[in-house]
Length: 401
Image 1 (tube, rainbow, N blue to C red):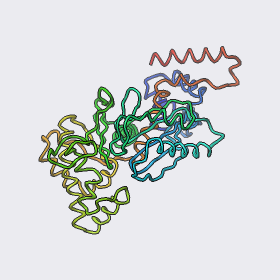
Image 2: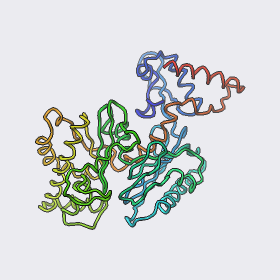
Image 3: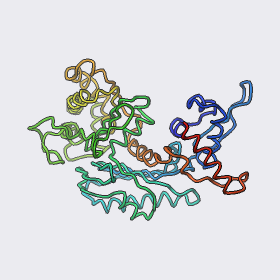
Image 4: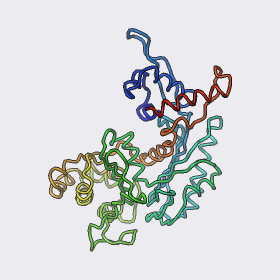
């Protein structure tokens, strides 16, 4: 199930090679997933000798989830089906006016209702994933603090479930962690077991994959690299400390150096990049300074985690082509030579990374245990006993894997 969800359609032969199981066992498993409405099959291509192997694909309506991303300056909501199929999507700008969590969630719920009302005949959503710019407690999904949102101790999941009136599980996580999950599964971190994704907007955060698994820390707070204390005499940060990395590489720092203090958002960054393209020395210098400070913080990240690959996401991906030379030169001077070889690449999923990651978080339960999805009615099974037998047999096969 996970193979066809993440990598797309596969023949039964491909799945046999991937799992190491024989084709008859794969056939039984595919039949079970089909009986649960999770996959669909179509005839394979003809041309090779013998009977063509059927193609198995995820059924986007088998499981659908709501994915939500709450940023400092925007909101995004999508209905996403198995296989990562985006079935409906909406994003809106959000003023940085200190709106309360309750007001923001009410607006999010309105967007969710509009999307859900637009597909009344389709299957209902089975879970909700939320990516939010802030520190999220792993045990219960509470937003402990969102420094740039101005929120503290908010049970976002429960608030949304109550406001929306949907009795489904809600999973909440940090936006950088969700961008990292998405990039690791579907983007710049695919196939990389030691991977860091650095997410830059007003705030700065990182998600960490170590040995192929997310590194979250005791409470789920790992990755708050934006608050590394790199300049003790530096500027006051939103978090209350002084000289955090965020104060030197965050969006506000770049705009301040470019002479655009007080502005913000993607449009402001795009304007700085356009000025750099036109040869404006102030814009070029501002971006290079961000590259230097990126190197200072990344040297600490590299020495601590020794990643194989680092993806720059958010506005960091936009400035990378302009800042790469300054970043590479500074990093070569700051990091021990073998460690400095970590590849630094742009994220592939763009601003949708946290949204896609939130969806993957919501899917995880069913990918981990597809047999928890009820069997659908099938004409060849005339009784509930037949369905129970099928479930039991495939459950035993799954455990054997």
